[in-house]
Length: 408
Image 1: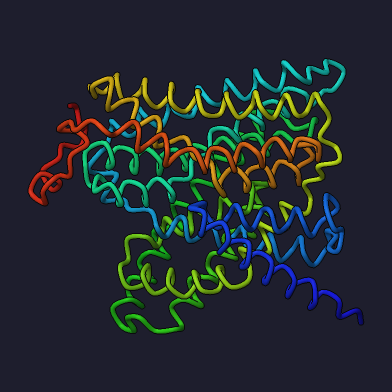
Image 2 (image 1 turned 90 degrees about the horizontal axis):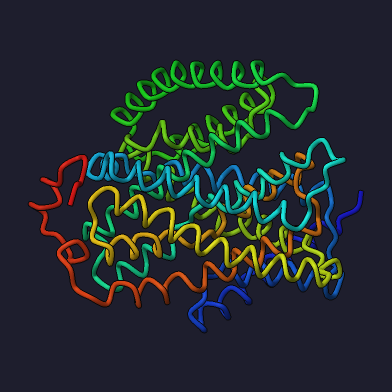
């Protein structure tokens, strides 16, 4: 038996942590350091680590756990506060970047002879629909505006944005087989959500009962993770839907059970942080081969990054303006939704596995993730300098009484 995988894991853990801490020192998210670690270890630099079956499967576990914890962290009560306003912001904030991503791909690689060309273009569009607000949350908290009406709208829209993105991803992956009929794809998706509703009710009641009987017991975290893995397998194996869809909705099902949510999230964060997340982010860097970054791809990377920023600002800002936010606050909401982070990387990985994102498109996507993650705090601080009622911290009474439509 070859035990070199142990050395690979050790190298990835050490390099992602060291470069992650270095990134933090210069006020950059640790995910940037983890991506750089993968680039340095992989074929683009020192070539000491290659993509293996073990690394691919370990990275897949990392993706599933990341999406499960994202589901667990979803605050449905926050959605109730912003309601219809967040929904409109999210919908337009998905549609505009999607169109921008499709147009950008077709402008650079419009191969009419490829029957999958439009599907590949659509997948680049899906990558741009993603939103990761972890860096936005920290920025808003630092500015004392996390509980403002603008901050609440951003958080609510980001949750709906993720759900819409997962649904679009689910639809597109269903069409990866050219012989698949649209009716069959939508039929499978409809059946999956019916199945999800039934399982959701049963498992919610089961975990709610366990929550009352055992509280924060270690077996709860084990049962929750097992449920996540089973639902991920069922989604992929029986319905042909991406496993991360099952993982995300497994988290949504459990996110309102307080003790289960808190305890499972706490335990899984340790598991993810120590091992599986570094393996996932490093694997993205390892498969990103900068040697394939031609002049055309370099130009595509720059254009895609500009499109990624502008379409979120325009799309989400337009949605906010329609819902009655002042122009200044609407722009702040758009700026807060710019960061793509790990969500875009997860979508890109799914596209690569489905054969819809070629390896030479990975460097531009990684650049989009790094630039949007770095630029979001700067843009948001600049955009929210002016004090308005909508970006001023709300009192507890105002927060509790915020109407579901949030028409300002």
